[in-house]
Image (cartoon, rainbow, N blue to C red):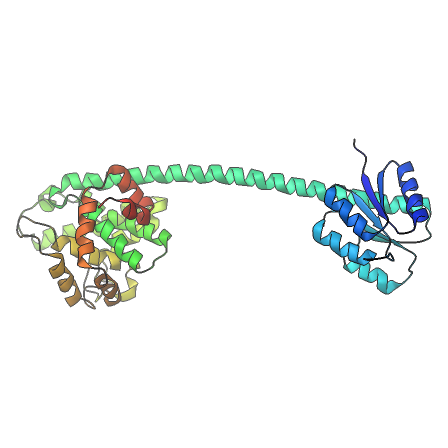
Length: 372
């Protein structure tokens, strides 16, 4: 085992040599300094000391000044003040400034050894605790990193499943092929313009992408019917909101997105379905989605009508602010130039599979990285 190293600081050579001799005889590796400046210089060159024993009254900086300096630059090294000043006020000042102990001169060898032994043990335990804490932090960081990586892998697998669910719906209803991707991108664009937190935007994106997933359970005779639906068929079609909600809410990471699936056909004035929610009772993501959904529906061709322009669609949505749509969100929506929607529709149409997954995980990054 290496010897514990002790620095003795005293301006009286005889006292300094006596203390050093006692400590050397007790098995310590002892170094001496005649004043505070010399001690500070030694610590700057080699700070690996287990304990410092210092006088108070010395020429130049005194022992209390040295104590302050050690507390600032080398806080892990205990300092024992060794002085002939028998003054409670001075001793109290020393302890308040970080002294480990206060040893009065004259003292005998047993007193010195006891104080030094306790100081060295204190340093050992402090260093041991520091090492333990550092090792613990390293272990926590490593395990946190592995957990984060595992969660990211799990989230990627969820998004692949989510993408497959959306594509399955597109295969059933080719009339609206690409609708889920476009309406997701439009919803994300509005949400970003509103300054919504990125984590919430991610949830909103997933809810938008899966909004019609409940239609998987809708009979083909109704879902693919070319003409107008009967009241009975309309009632069945409208069940897709709740059916989709029941499907999605069972997946833990999609539980919040499920609320958007449930409420995506609600209207701001309460005349929507399935629950007739109104105003801010409708989830924010669903209120944003309602605008994006209408924008895509009006600007997409259907067998029974041609697509309208984005300018006309924006004006039509504005006319229904406060009734079908949240008027405050419409204001934000109108602040986005119509050219941006045209450009975005083109970019989303060319969205790769990997970019789609990124759109669902990191919406802001995905849209920024898409080529024009």
